Image 1 (cartoon, rainbow, N blue to C red):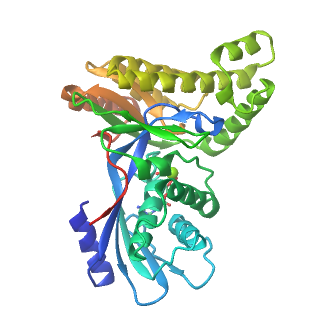
Image 2 (tube, rainbow, N blue to C red; image 1 turned 60 degrees about the horizontal axis):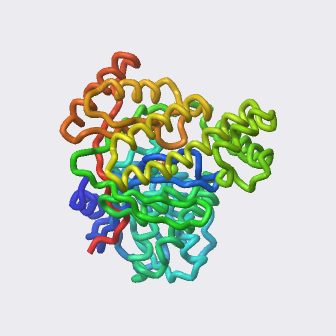
Image 3 (cartoon, rainbow, N blue to C red; image 1 turned 135 degrees about the vertical axis):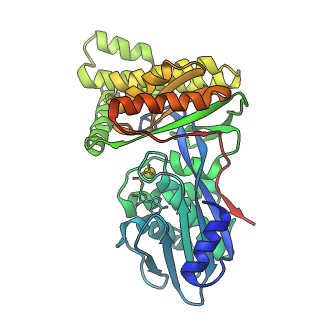
Length: 384
Ligand code: ADP
Ligand code: MG
């Protein structure tokens, strides 16, 4: 997939040249898992996989969306109320169009074609990259590329995913897609919405992304249950959110019997994970990749044992990585029950590590898992 191939696909689909291109990356979260809905911190980077959108204006009030990853095209009429409809994939785009229109952006009719090398449903946030690409294409077509500030655009895209796709996602995916900078991770405070950049640009290191290509059924219900357990634990501790509690307070409440069972385990993970995320920022700022790697392993163990959102495929990847030379750390990333794991490795060893992990995975599960290397990539842009 390239800028040229997307322009070519646009021409063969719509019979005319595209007027412009937009680009929005996928992401991985380096550390800070299941902390967002506890008012905590996350630390994502944009990856070198992205959704491209080619667009051209039309003479009427229709917007047509086509994706090379979907069979069915979608059409939205700008003069009627915009609602969720079939095909379902285009609801991310419909929601964005509805949000922009509600904000008073003077949208115009357009044809938009998407192509993406972010795996769909793999936990690398193809959904946010699609939303952001749709938003930028519609804004560019309207001649209003800078009309909505990035923070507000992130919230608008998040609302599209809530209201039109029925997915109660946090703000991380859309924020990193819009705000990312090459060579930087983004520390995002999920309570205040504030963010700051943290260097992630050591030329001697690279991040491997390993896609287990599984999604275990428990994912949806498991997520809702954990949110509820976290809120119950915070209430038992007299706190507004687990963000406001420290590790000593959780341990004391456990010892006193005020927190027990699953609620104690969930609280221990969240509170520890928030501390690990802030420690990880210090480690990266000091150039201590070994220290950062230890925090990744600790994060994985906590997600596996206390939060119970890992699975055998993710655990296998982490254990296989741990046995390789030149690996600093590894962990599952994303919500869990499948999806991807990440490995922080020496750049010179990365290829060998990727091969060893894929070989070991194949031995155990009788199929290969895709692996790719990435550095911290730039955020979404409207290409000149
Ligand atoms: P993730 O964001 O981790 O990839 P989600 O379940 O949140 O997983 O979003 C995946 C969904 O987003 C897909 O099932 C599809 O509906 C939609 N989607 C994302 N990218 C594209 C694309 N390029 N073309 C069509 N649909 C897409
Ligand atoms: Mg998503």
